[in-house]
Image 1 (tube, rainbow, N blue to C red):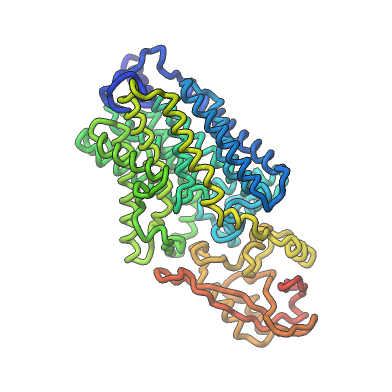
Image 2: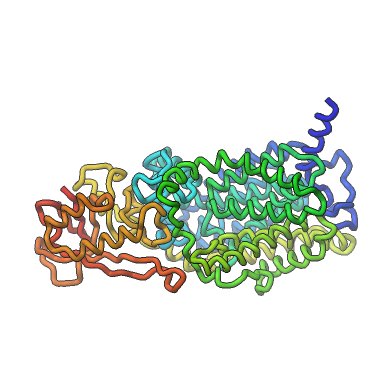
Length: 632
């Protein structure tokens, strides 16, 4: 009985917040030798029990702000929305500063943290149903993925029929099912879900930091995490489903380091780390792989403190907990891919400009750059004596290791998409900057009043957030772009008489594939294609059709070709004189992978002879510049 109690006490000690930050001591912010507060001041388990309701409250606050923003009384074009966003942001930051000074935030802090990103994002986007970037680039396939799960609950690839998902489906599945329950189109649900997810990620970061530091410091750390999401060129806000994994990773790194270094195996924290790893694999596989790498790096840094066997067993325990969750997606995929020889993942054949150099946010002349510089100095100066600094330094080092490995992997025809871990790096350095500033304030507590520090921090945070409409102007403008063509969707429905999820469509109007749960014959980019879909072979098949002239041969090729043929063709009529009902030709812009060269995709303009689509085999409807051709 005694040993069991001792084990429980050890577990509680691992998740008990460090009570040294802003304590009346000259020790480091999270120093190993700093005194612990009196028992009366220690945080109770209430902080753990308030995490779930707090996160729910943050999401509700975000949705409430979005509801109000959608009814903003001034239509675009206007600057009134920016004025309103700046004013609301200033009020929320002031309220958060006041709560931090009080030292006990409670659920109110979660509501304010949920409303903050909503004010920053929802007001500039009040006149459009689309999120940042509109339906351009990656957002097209993201909206299409949500639409897939708004139409069906089973796990499936977002584009190709009959294939298990490889791209992690958790966020898209939840958003799609919520859209179905709310009676909202999947593509229209993407924006409110994205903004609410930004609130949820920030709330999770706050709740986890509250288990490590005092509330008065957990709030600035949460705000600093949010600021990092708007830092160029990463712009973590542009990928909200990654944010929900990246934002809590920084405080989890501190808890993970503590769990690995504990004298006794802490079951509860190790289970929690395993659940996070598995959930990350369901939500954003690349960040899950990076988290596994970071845990390994932490373990290696602790080899001098513990035996290799003990650390290995703890890592295996984390992996064992995560494995059942990982297999939800990877099990069906491996079952299909292994017999096919495990074709390479085309998503890894991509080099954006952000990946051509190592990220150095601490050198940027900005508020967040200064914060990252402060964090870098603090990490290097405090790593020997401070547990949190060692944990965050290991996380930052893992980011740069991932970047290096990604650069080297290019030589072998792939990459690790290291630009996707940049948001973790920025968040870690920003949080380290807050911890370093807190330690400096602790040393200067007799010369600097806490209220002055709060005012300065509020002003600096406001300077970052109020600039979002300027720094993200291109993405905001794109959000006011075209939405899926409802008329095309209705025309296809009337002509086929079949539900959209039963149709495979060939088109290069990629927004159409986000407007209804069609299956696509191709994807907009080779990197979006499922490894088992044989994108290159499908592209070549379409080019083979373009060389045919006999409609009977074309129909036979569709019936007996190597791939399931499209049920619907939505093509652009060629730019020639065209009379209604006359024979024409149709254009489609195909593409092929060009990795590692630039551009990453090479266009293959292709023309299909109009004679192939004769009235015996196809029903035709003209709509604007497009023609809808439905197989009979």
